[in-house]
Image 1 (cartoon, helix red, strand yellow):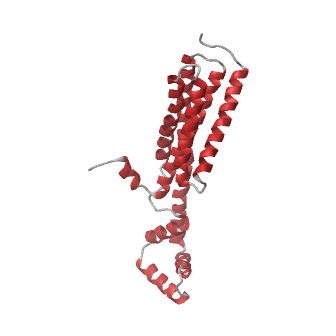
Image 2 (cartoon, one colour):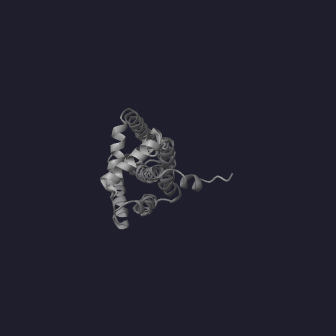
Image 3 (tube, helix red, strand yellow):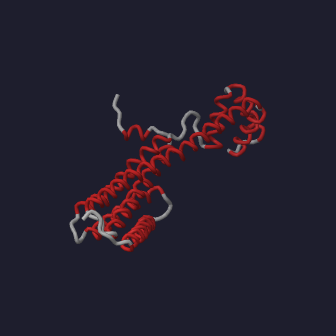
Length: 241
């Protein structure tokens, strides 16, 4: 049986796919900005190349673990809410069939059927379908949840971890490979390009224009690095020889 990430992603629920995309975009963005801020702040403090690399790698690993942990906790809470919602609807439907019938009637009235026809449909459905089917329909219509298919916190956590690492590697590689005296400028340019590309990708899932999204990403990144570099320069020192 052939398995691929693309096929697996395609067959996950829409809500879970959107959650994975969100975690990936945010993770990459945070990785780029956080590690750029760390290494440029360290450059402002005149750290040696070895200390710059250690600081950047430590920030990358700490940030990736923090992002993954935060995503796991957040999505786990959403997962529990979804399961509890289904459990509550199941309990209410089993206890109050009249309310379930009224819900079906209301649903079909909204679709344009007459009251008499809607009641006839509701009576037939109540006679033919079981409680589980009613629950499936109600949670799908009211809460946009499919019974048994809930947000997966591990998906969001893993995506956030990997995307943070991927984003953080850009300023780390720029800082490592670009020689002095262009290290600071080169790292800054690499950060701006990475944020612009991430903004380009994320704009496809937003109502904002691509230009606005890219500009917003770049401004936030520049403000972060300006602050960290200024603090590093304020405590200017030489560490590591």
